[in-house]
Image 1 (cartoon, rainbow, N blue to C red):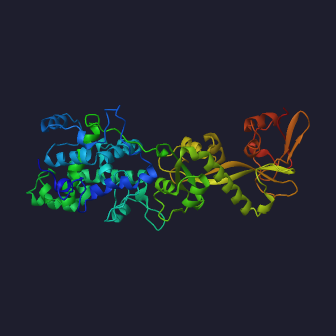
Image 2: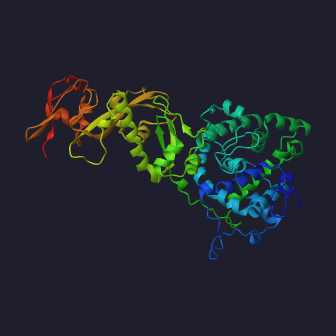
Image 3: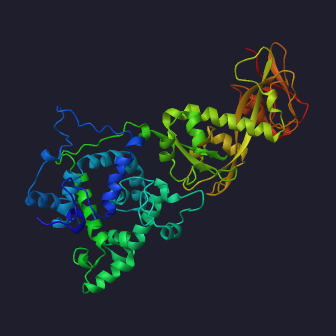
Length: 490
């Protein structure tokens, strides 16, 4: 059986392509990523007949079996079995079998996100398999032509679809943002062609080349009939997509089992940072390999997160590093507060308790920019606050919650300071302004205080309780010097 020019021409006895082939290049990148993903390249045990990496005992099927399986595929995309598709089934299921199993393992991480976006946009779920052909699911992939990311956007197309590309940032490498952009492209192309395989061809070579191929074919709008008139790369690209889609639907029959990385990339958490920091510093501080840190955060071109208070940015970390990062983050907030209030850093002591110290509690204000689709509950989870607190801090009413708006959020930070030092008078509160009469703890209101500020300085105290203890009906009626009950002693 003859195959496509890309799948079978110019290969050596090991199945390696001796000329430039972007599909094979991206697939082979999985070998380079071994140092980050830490795949176990050993074959599965002989006791697991379901999975084998041995190409000599890979299952073989007749054309009739393949045709029957293709006929049973139920999808808005018309999947056709032919000799070009058969060549790529052989490429992925036999010749590049081990790499294909690694690719299937990576899909377990990316596909839930991709499926969510496809569903939201009302697009065929099978389009997710295109990313396996485009980049072998490597968000940092860059082709010889400069196409970048999971969905391989060139510079001009990335800019058209609102992906930021600057000296520091390349959002083409952001898995989520690039997926949203790819879906917008799919929808625009489908309005033109009304056929998903033509859309996929246009995704690879551009609508201009597809239109030219349609004209040269005599006006046919079937991808297989215009195939001889498409660019060489696209003539392999479309059948590769069909082959990968088929294999993902029939993994068990081909004894392809996901080969998962041992690296804990599949349990990743996302944080927002509002200060500039290098990935190298974070890697050293959090005890993560530098390669893993850059793999998880591929959008930062100079390996530096250029975040500011007004423009926070995303940081992705393995979930087992959450505690270490939160400790680092709290330390950065304290340092920023002390610097802005001109507190001598030498007065701040080590967390190990000295003989003579006091604990200072500060409420640090930060601005949070509402992202697309975020709810008040989402922001509460992201900031560690409650939705009610955020609503009260910002006096939110119906209609005030809009994408792009900024919200004030506060975080409570405690640190130890030498007892002989005096901090400047700021809106941050210390534990010194209270009195204990044996029955109640009292607090003397300071300038700038609110009931919410005071309540948050004491565990288990709410604004409602303060109002009840002190007969306060209007939260704004408190004044500096007023003595108020906080809570009973004990």
